[in-house]
Each structure stands twice: as structure tokens, then as C-alpha cells.
Length: 239
Image (cartoon, rainbow, N blue to C red; front, side):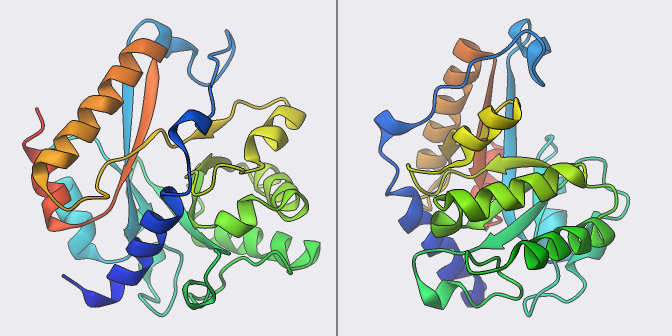
């Protein structure tokens, strides 16, 4: 394993543990929503976060199934990570946002709640320039930022203006994104299941089964994992 990825992943696990199962948002499928067609055919979205290298991208593609890589903007981890998106039909931006731990807020250009409206808008415009074909963005960590109504509302408006859809990774139960999307009249799009909080194939298969059941019941489900060897092995053998 790449030791440098472990703390970032661990922070996401720690934040996810803060989210009580009974507090997971209930998403209604509106007749004219993004997911209206899933009423007839259940769909499962699988997102792999923390992608910053060609090796990780190749391992995702080698599973042979349709998986959406969520790619880090350029940072100290990879100053050319945005180039991974070139030619990809489906991908996302994995945006570092303020968490509850200072040590995890040091990644390049992590969005902070102390940023001004102008700073947030400038960052979003930069993301559009880096990823001209991107449609979706989800948060990397971000428990503090998504829980701050003012900062999150500013970011959401800026993302919307640049043609982005925000997918809430739900790293905190009190996320303000559901309220904000409702105010804009948008569909709330959010993670339903983290698949690899435990690094073993059996656990990941069970989490995928959980996501499939959700999709069959509701019409769609969104699962998030990470580019670990075990996760790729589990996805490749999940049938």
C-alpha cells in the first residue's frame, strides 16, 4: 500500500462513523428528477475516491465494470492528476474540503470555511478550467465544510453556475447539503454506502449487496470505495 494514502482514507472512515444509520437522508425520486428513468430499471453507481495516479485508474478499468473514478485536483500527491480525466467518458472531481482534523486539511487548496466568497468562486472556476468536461464533484473528507451552511451555500451556488452537480459523500450526519439543494429546487444526490471501511473481500461484497438492495427498493443507490487492491479484487469478483 501507498502509506501516504492511508491517513486520508482513515479520516474518511472516521468521519463516516459519525453518521448514524437512522440519520441517512431519504431521497424521493421526483417525476422530473435526474433519476426518473431508474424507476423502471434499478441502477447502482459505484464511485472510487482518492484517484490521483494512472496505476489507480488502470486498476479501476481492469475490473471490467462501469465504475466512476473520482479524481483529486492537482496537489502534492500528483501535480498532473487532472490529466487522468482526458478521454474519460465517466469521471468525477474529488474535492478536498475542511474536516474536523487540522492534519487532514493540509492537502493543496483544501476548501476552508474561512474562505471568502471570492476565494471559493475562484477555486470553482479553476476546477472548471482543469476539468472542462466534468459534471460531478464529491467531497473528500469535508465534515466541517458541509456542516457549515454559509460556506456550503456559497460553494453550491458557485458549482451550479459552472455546471457542476455536487454529490454529497455524507461524512457527517448534520450536512447542510440537503437543505441547500431543496432551496435551489434541485435533487439531493448523496452517498448511500461506503463499501470498504473494512479491508476484506467478504465485507466489501456484503456492502455491495446492501447497495443493490437499496437500488432495487428505491430505483438507484450510490456506493463509494477507494482504490485499494482488496477493493478492486472484491469488485472484480462481485458478479
